[in-house]
Length: 225
Image (tube, rainbow, N blue to C red):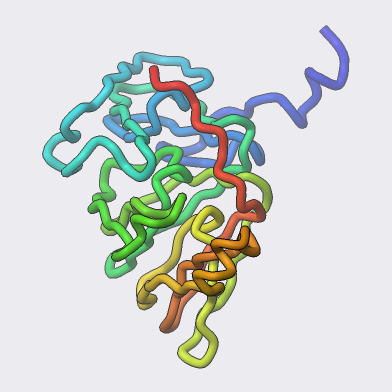
């Protein structure tokens, strides 16, 4: 068989080590030797002896909840083999979390992660009036976290002298050392007259980085399986 489809650009290469790797810009590969966690329904292919289990109340006591931001269910993947994960052809990235690190991420951007990572569910105080960025997962431990983002993300430095204001529908996540609050950028009168479309932002202050996706529109939510 010949053609561009079968070129080395698209051909899967042999795995070199267990764990998570970037297969291409739209897909992550996880070589499983034991257990890992993934967004339910995100597996697009696998080979080997793997079992996929929908989780309702946590995995091995690690998860306090099996639902992260915006109703994202998780599954455990156990056994030995390889699995490929993707989400609606969004761009994929890997974050390496080490001891002492903390990374807060919107649940809609979580694709898969090592079972050695743990997280807690966090909400932005007073964010009930906003349309996005309400529920976040705070990851700690040691391991890799696979993320998806519509488009190429912006990583913006935050300093004590320069806080960053982010649309609540565009926030992906932020590093430790940042505090959050909500900021109303227009008056009630302006909102009643139709507003500017930029009513409320998430303010990040301190020292660290914030990750933003280049789109304000909420992403399409996949059907639950």
